[in-house]
Image (cartoon, rainbow, N blue to C red; front, side, top):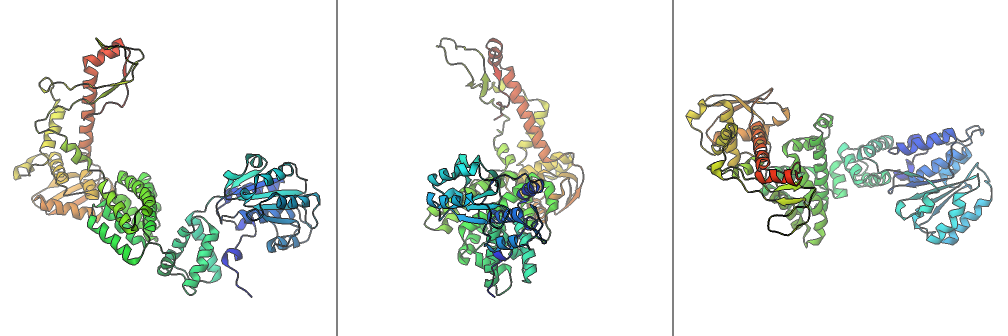
Length: 577
């Protein structure tokens, strides 16, 4: 007996065997149960998601005679009566499939419609199934419009297409439309496990994950790739063999690249790219896998509670969760955007690996600077008052400046100069914060250990950040922690988020403190944090924002515009420089 490929052997025979299309199955099942049957159905979706399969199951449901020959319209065709068996084997005289890709003219459609005047020979209904219906010519569409709108009661139309945008609206309006969605990799994986168990084929779970992702939502593609992988692996599925067959990149390279980007390690990025060149891995595939991992990281960062649902048996999921903690959320979004656009630029370069290297180096070049370092660089040594930025003011009246012609009505952007330094005094709270900031880069002496713990830890952390001694997760650990005790050799920190307590972050923070001569050992406990550098930075930023807003509102010219011309300050337009 000849071999039957998996995609044909395991084609669903009834609605209960279909996977990934529950919304379509539920609608058709309810319609068949209540016998609220439409005369024309349109199934849309990409290749291999079940459009033809649904059509055949629907035809069996309409014509099933039951095991005893006394059945009627049903949502659960028996599969053993003559009508069910003939439809499965493709020889049911009252079920006609027309491939519009090769029969797209008006003559072929008219030949099909000529059969509509005859009642069913064997079944309860005639079913005309037109696949890839969007390929029909305009004349062919026009020829079938009247019959499609008012067919005989014994005739049902089933249309299928991968491109519904090309189907005329006059046809769409005469059909019930169902969109069959691409299947999630998890859905494909579960089905492959069941199929290979029935086939008694040993399979590595990681190999099946590769096949599920490579199928890109198509169950038929997944089963076809599985057939190929079984032959390639001599009757078994192993990750290495499947990866070689697909030409896909080892995810360990992807994780290594993302971690190197998170740590600003350009040397590792270049070395990993060269390793990909030596192994002949596609540069486009590398960027695609990187974007897929970054997308999953962004989801975990936006919804931290989903980390608890990570499958501990999936090494990719565990590594993705670890990287989501290592890389800030804004950098994840930036890397995803640059990687996505870089994928389209690979074909423009003479060497795709050189292009891949440039995309990855671009990711390093455009990484945002640490916010605290950027803020520190804007502070003048003599505590020069913060200048007031340009102010956006809206007015409901036309107004003219003195000795000038009328100008169009605002909104206008009016630069407001800062007040002279001699006339502006700092509030006590600002003086304290600014003093700590200007001392951030100063070395710590033994006398400084007598200062309050919060001031000491803030000064140390700002100094380490300014010197770029700590970055990424180590920087976040330092900013989010509180110094609760210290002596000459041991500093004790407290943090609220357990996710910050990563071994690599602790080791790098300890090494930075040792290099700066502060502490030889660092211990960490979990608990409520009352005073940490991040909180102080946020407080200082709020103070600067409030002072900028107060300075603008107190400016005599702004008050005059608001009083005389009904101007108003646009909320959110004031920013301290």
